[in-house]
Image 1 (cartoon, rainbow, N blue to C red):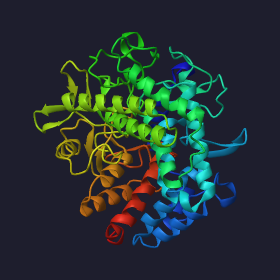
Image 2: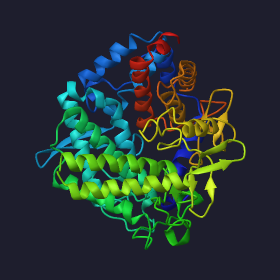
Image 3: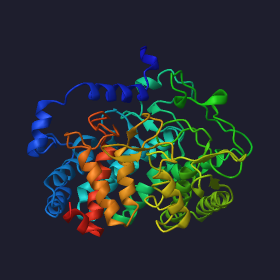
Image 4: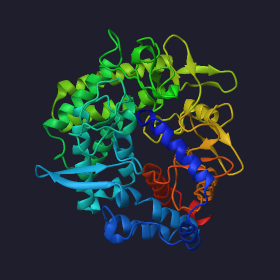
Length: 481
């Protein structure tokens, strides 16, 4: 295959075939059998937090199952252990967080990867400085190109990711891949707001940060496409239709009804209908955070009102258009719509998802529409829900048929108060790591040894977050394993 056509999707599928076709290294199997730590040696870890290590020791002592405690101790620190690079840039903190096996920083992934550490910030000044640096780095990324989803460690680099080299779009230095995804601009705001809430530190929120917030609001406005499609387009030569956009790179047609158009989903797959519902719900929550921060930190009431106004407009559009009738599930939220009356009823494992809406603060778990939609998602009426001999969960088009994403099982456990359901989810996660001690991007519903991405830090730390959440709110679950 020619290198210019070798995409991230091809990489992931090749990894799945490779892992499924070969036995795991004997060293890994021996480590799994003895529950030896799979973390790097202390001297080689990218960042060390005594507070995080203490939490691992404390929570592990409360877990009755030694294998689960071992998984937790491997997974929670994986982002800190293996993916972060901290430096001072102009005397100010600067932090890069790569995804793991791909040497680039996604705005979404980097924010989500460090999220489980946020509650530790008040007790760990160095960890807080690390996150401070990430807020600053993400600010520079957004100002570089608000339409890009991933960035290279060197923001002056003219060498993007290998599969992006021949993309037909306005590539800029520092951009790794330029897929427009609404959630890419939401996650950094969620992170910045949480950093501020935990530390009360306003140092990262300088003039550059304010410009980035203005740019986020302007980009969301632009992609409502009321008068024109805006400046963004994207085309890629690929064997997969999910890696490119139709209609000269603008995406499939949709009606301007007040929602934000997205080229791609959080999975980096192209939207079928450009009005992605969970992304628009997430945008509302994001805009309200921007309003609060511009008001209380920047004291810019004019820009804050603009963010609030846009949030209200999108909220009204969601109330008017998001609800649809599924022939089996009844009235539920659609996953994507086009504003002309067409809708897709499904869910994808990547977050924001419909399943993960309460996790992102977009609705409550008790919301009747959420519950109806959740029941649909976790049923075979959802075309990407898979039930096999190893586990059940949600996948998506990105990897393909019968491949469950651990992320969906984790999200299922994080969006229920039913301890039996939580316990079942933890059992599935424990039983499907394929003797590696880590979570993966996806695994085959009947054979967990067939998995993609042995080093996927987001899934690892999200699993760590689940165990921390259970230890705090549902300790009985960890005692009954």
